Length: 300
Image (cartoon, rainbow, N blue to C red; front, side, top):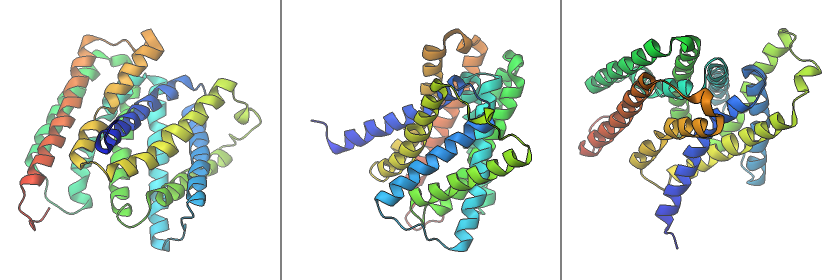
């Protein structure tokens, strides 16, 4: 019999594995990035609402918090659009390797967002990440647009995580998710209406696309979000951080296995990707180590 700690650790790995699979689903779904994200957020909103309704959670939050959640919803919608667009114009491996830079966008934005000083080693690690990106840029020149879109997506992801970092301290994650997903759908709907994109053809999807979208919205979005919050309350932040950094590794391996030759990259790409991913991991280890050594009561 597995003990509770091991069960939660394996559950977290399963969730991170699901997040890695999200990128593969983005490549398998044949529709473009904007309708893909619209369907994903619409379906995920329904699944999260169902979870909230079954658990009888209240959706009542202050007006100021709703405005913040609406902004976060727009940011996450743009993050997913640029993320899936990057996959469409390049591939899963390039997108996941580049989007790993999100941790360093967070390191740059966090001092501004939370009004603290920049930490010296974050600057050093940021330069190392840039070196890793430079290698990828030079060996995978045919994927310039995908790399650019993935960098924008990483910046948006960092912004979203900082906004949610404050919201999560005050409100239920499922309630936050409901408003953010719903507002994201709303913003994309307005764009589609004004651009005249809604038509009978818009809703004519293949059976495989519907199947992949349902999987993306239910398991990879609603379940993974709610499950991750539950698990993170039961195991240490250090373990969570190290495990989440496995997402691009899982995703790149899954892409190679499922999508085959289209994901085979040059040696230079893998050198650059390893530099980025390992730097992100080392940054997390160092940051966690310094937090543990900090005397009680010392300012963060």
